[in-house]
Image (cartoon, rainbow, N blue to C red; front, top):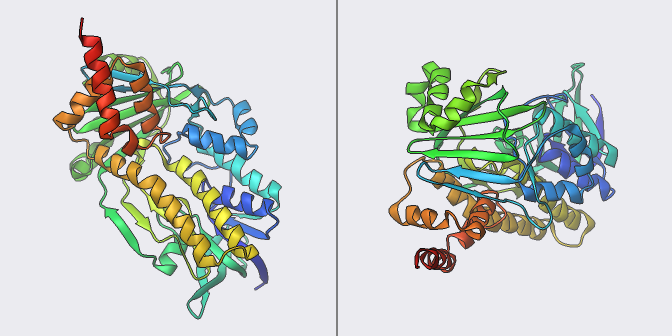
Length: 407
């Protein structure tokens, strides 16, 4: 058994952990990054990096590594409600496009960036125990692929290990804003289903699906139905997945001409906030906050958390602020940013028909390109739902619609 002393240990090396480790290592901290997976490897994912996440990759100097991998850009989000379709640009001044890379490509890139920054990266490492001393987290104990058990210590251990975080399980953080699973989501990869730069979304009562281009000339198509139907549908996932497309005949015709290249995989998740810090520990990404994947915010949320947490820990470790003050600011910034999208997402995930007032607003948005761009940016997490659905903005949308209708 060996022991080292690090400034920070990060458990989990995907979209939250690797950027956190990279950013701290770039600040000169001694960082250990561990993951039980080896890379490249796949994981269940929404794939989409929203424009805010792409802007983060650009800030970190990593976008130039992603673009040559052949992942096509997505410049239009289209929402087919049946009677009408709202299509707009999700882009920002910092990033015009979204991308939907395979995780085998993206995560390998991020792990490599952490290593290049100077982090000690250990793939294939299983954490058996989170070490504590007097109520404070002090390190981890685990083993690599060779089986030798080692203990490593740090001032802070960060859980970036997702929904079933070993760090969160050890520290038992407070939960708040909890909501149960709302939607079952299943996806597969298809060839011969070009998207022409569009992220297509189809919204029907009690059903929804989306399709977006990814690597290798493939399109990922994800279908969702209410969690209440989980038991009834689990005996025939494929049949229920395929028959959903009949709710949009044009899309059904396109996908009949395509080829499914993989098995169908999926999951359902709870919705929660967890207290993201405590004595000697912190949480980032899904380990600290999770919501239904219907708005595809997970990767971009993880990038944002990585930056916020790295800034806070730099302040704490350098003595600029106390640990509790710095991490309290991290939590407050996270929650303020994501709570409106959390409420919007969990409402969408019910797959209930929109109330009449919302239906009227969406009908008024249709055909108004400025409003349609705003709706696309809201779904991309660029604009807060609190702003887009505010009385003031709704009033402008309805006024513009009446002006067009008036001869």
